[in-house]
Length: 171
Figure 1 (spheres, rainbow, N blue to C red):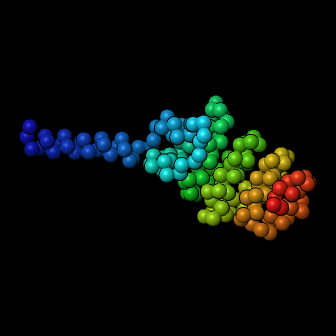
Figure 2: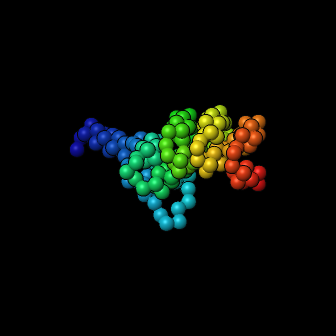
Figure 3: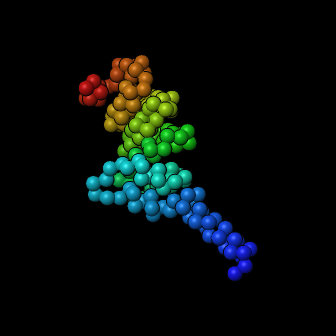
């Protein structure tokens, strides 16, 4: 081989290696593999190690109504490992437009991942969900308010109709 052909082949090999390792969006099945398991616990480092685009795949999985709920719940929880504005905006919108079980998980993930870095997202979402018909959703919203907005939390406690929700939040 000539020097020029060898250089082109080497450059092409390096580009292919980079495209398959760090710059490409991780395959859906890799992300799903991290969400499965009987005794699953969030391993934020493993999700971040998949590289850029992982949060986009997690958002798609959380939105996918054909998946079983436990995978959707785990995808929401894993999103808390990506504290970026786009992820916070997704969790905020998702929590306000879905069924109660997913709304609870969404506001919990938002509070866990963004309570310190993006408290306004958490406060807006929790405030909106504090009027939700489901007491379980209101409980999760109250917990989010308790950690990020003490004044709003006190208003929430005075307005909450369910005694057991107020008691659970008082502990």
